[in-house]
Length: 233
Image (cartoon, rainbow, N blue to C red; front, top):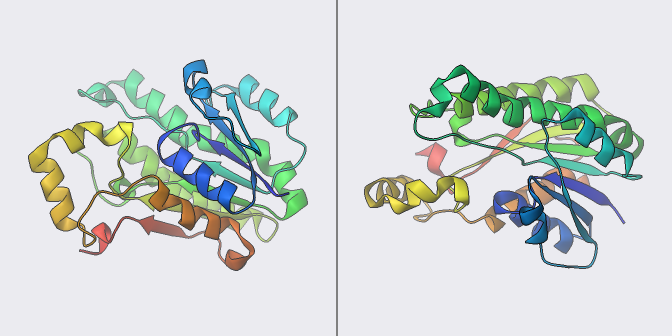
């Protein structure tokens, strides 16, 4: 059975991806930052949940030491700081360490196992990889950098490992709860989205399954928006 590791897979977009990968026949390992997150993951066949802080070299090494086979890595762990906290250097560095450096840390740790399987990596970019977010400079910078990191690793590691990214649009998660609760902002988002609704975590899963599959065997270095058409309008 093919095996996939999904960081940040215990909730939100990562959990939607996990469900799609299970349905596609993968054995799935998801990670959560806290024991509560891990405990919230329901028991299912071929699914395990573990704690992981992607900013910790020791924790990443410990987890990867327990993995004997890996066909795909999905980097979905991420964070954002509100109330202007990303304008502080400490806040900026925290977000970069999770979203960007954490992604690179996982890619490097998983590389030996993925090389053995001719595996795939899917990183998580964002619509903010293409637009400027005035309230979250670190999140925006990190997601723009994830795009360039994806392209760089795709070139460096081809043809042994394919490296692509998804760019989710406005998806119903804890990170977007404030925007959803703001009626004027939510209405504006829906009005610009040709599909006329917010996305759901399960909307992302199919794109990731495809990018990890043999059907995408000649695709690397690409960033796939999954946004209901938002970026096209």
